[in-house]
Length: 71
Image 1 (tube, rainbow, N blue to C red):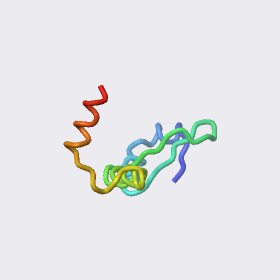
Image 2 (cartoon, rainbow, N blue to C red):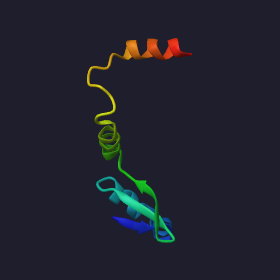
Image 3 (cartoon, rainbow, N blue to C red):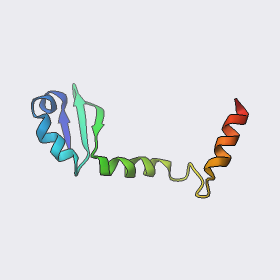
Image 4 (cartoon, rainbow, N blue to C red):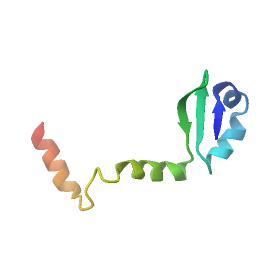
């Protein structure tokens, strides 16, 4: 769903409910400037962006040690 910033400000409660199930793209002067996502979609959205970036066999302690060694 796409909504302009003025409409969002005037009806925030309505769009807050909609955001719990759908992504809302917020525009200003006709250009997209932000997205409003529900909490359940946020984790999925972030995970989708990391696919292929992080290996599946991440060892958190090993990563921490490597990071500290670089400092």
